[in-house]
Image 1 (cartoon, helix red, strand yellow):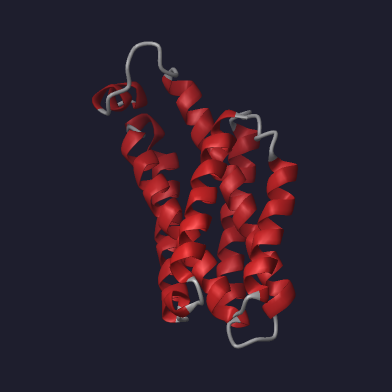
Image 2: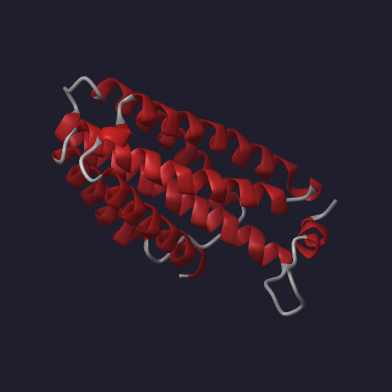
Length: 187
């Protein structure tokens, strides 16, 4: 099944983006998201590098670097324009990581859990849109989704939910993540 047929099945209407533009948006936003994730972990490691949580953060950061390298390749291979917001995500990702780490290990893990919950849904929606003509991209997204779920689970195992103000912090980070996705698809 093609991307166009799957888009039609998922309620895409005439006048919506053509399938090739939708795929470009997917590559663009996922590239931006993986870049942001790398920056979040860099910010966290700048504060918590030698802490007990540091090893877990380093492991997650390495996986995010691998994801980013894959999307760097897809951006070039498919000639997709990266989001113009990369300088914003450079600063915002690092600042979010460092700020939550300064609040403590649990807050840093709460940040990870919140971001990964949003990314899980985001990647699942993307995979559902991609047809057989984009099987490789769908497989990549599904593999990365598994990694992101592992990161969420790791964060929860490190007491993310016990962070002071967890609900408020988690809600704010989720809203910010959804906004970053929306903007990166378009700008």
